[in-house]
Amino acid sequence: MPEKENTPLVSIAICVYNGERFLREQLESLVLQTYSNIEIIAVDDYSTDSSVKILEEFAGNYPFIKIYRNEQNLGYVRNFEKALTLCNGELIALSDQDDIWELDKIKLQAENIRDNLLIYHDSRFIDESGKDMHKKMSDVLHLYRGNQPETFLLSNCVSGHSCVFKRELLTDILPFHPNQFHDHWIAYVATNLGSIDFIPQCLVAYRQHTSSSTDILNKRKTLDKSYHENRDVAKLRRELIWLKLCAAFHRNRNQAFVDRFTRLFENRIDSLFSFKYAAIIKENYDTLYHNHKLRKGTINGFIYRQMWGLKAKTIWANLFNR
Image (cartoon, rainbow, N blue to C red):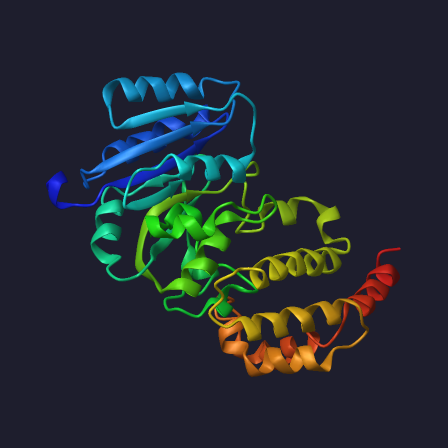
């Protein structure tokens, strides 16, 4: 185990809300990390169950745990934002309340971050009961290393639970947009300001259940039939809000491209067809869709579908959802 004085302090920010069901198991995996120089910043978002009691129990045995409790519920994103402002470490890790970490997760990430601003890793999925689902994050998404922020304009492969990033990022990632995923934003900013890397090893058991804040395996999509109604329309509107947020970032590596892409995306929403948008997708496909796992045989058809604007999709949805 490394000596504390020779290693950077790593702050683990864990946000808690009514997490009593899984919290104890996750805390065990945090306090037993083989990397010794850590602090755990636990922010409870006004839980009504025994979460705070569990946190206090662990803090009594592990003095590097610091507990904060909100006087009102801030919500998932704002709670993580608050937690980050309370971190003191040179390196910062994000933790959900219901996962299980491998005990050498922080050690491996601290050793391998090097000149990168952020390092993340692969994860394996478990179900609510903790049973292995025999699927990894890399089975669903291509993991990315490098410094091209355009890779994150249309999708994200960096999950918050897998991140360790340098403290210097805080100035540019905060405050978070309340309606956007904070891990997606962190990845976008990090690739604008530097580079990111990943460890191919699965270092977290990533729990999947219907109350999760994210739904990477589309569990809710298959359970809720109403999800399918006009989903393309809603998705385009959400993506435009995200792209405008990216375009407004004051330190974009390639501002001209982001502005042009956002403009073409918005024009597509207001039209039946957008040949220019399809053309920019074709020209930059490998970058914009790096994170997606599409079969090679579907690429041309996929690019063709990008030609259709929101008006065409709305007409199509109205015809077939009557």
